[in-house]
Image (cartoon, rainbow, N blue to C red; front, side, top):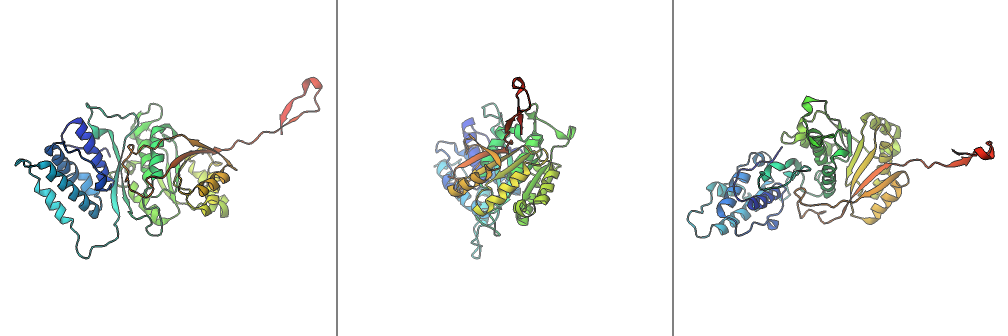
Length: 392
């Protein structure tokens, strides 16, 4: 889906209000939102009314009701402060009416409900300028997510910062995944799967320009995997939402995958991975539990020894340095690991700025199969003039 807006205003006002739209869609707390006091009442009013309250997408995939309540309380207070004493500055009654519908009942559930969240991302080479509609350069990813850190016994029902960092890297290096079969480990909500599907459908590898696969070969297969059936169901639900470009990708597979199979059922895992013909392995926030390091390393080792697999790209959140060190120590025994220099820009995609891992460092690792060390011996049967070094 490509984002569209209709409210007017100056170019700078549009950019500022667009950031508010992105923040609202991602459930950013209103206390973190800013609208300059010198913006015109009419611009801000029309933005709240047309681009948020009456927006078709946000009505079909709305933020949670309790978040909307806090947002509209803030929005109405902002409009009242901008209106001043001008009689013509009247707030549309529909905004007040909507706010009253959000007032909770006495028996309202205290636990945070799942919510739709829409993230906006900017494809490579798209830039803001005064002669381009600022809304038209963004694409969206909409997800139904848990707002609890742990839900149904798993952390996989929400999107974490490492996914955003890896997504930014992939958008900036589209050639790594365009026209390539991809397998993701621990797919969670489906965020990266939706992005990869969008890149498959949007870009042609040779020209880095939008392409229409309906007029050519089908795009490569994307394998989205997770160990938790509940998480994989949510992943499939999100990728199939009609608003997501991934819903039109014809080759997305969903598979349960237990990394422990690398230890207990290595042949079975190798067979599955070989049949995928995946060229790129992805994983975001997959290093979190020391007990899961050997299974993860084993899975990556098997994956990169199968078929066309060339590289694994991991987004690693630094929560516990000891766990990260243990992972690097183990994986470097079998594979080549290079840290990719990459700066995570929060402006790349709308982020919930107070999420629990917002301030944690994320590193991007490029992992490839280690080339065997070649040892040489002298061919002593040759004459002194013909002595050669031959590989052992």
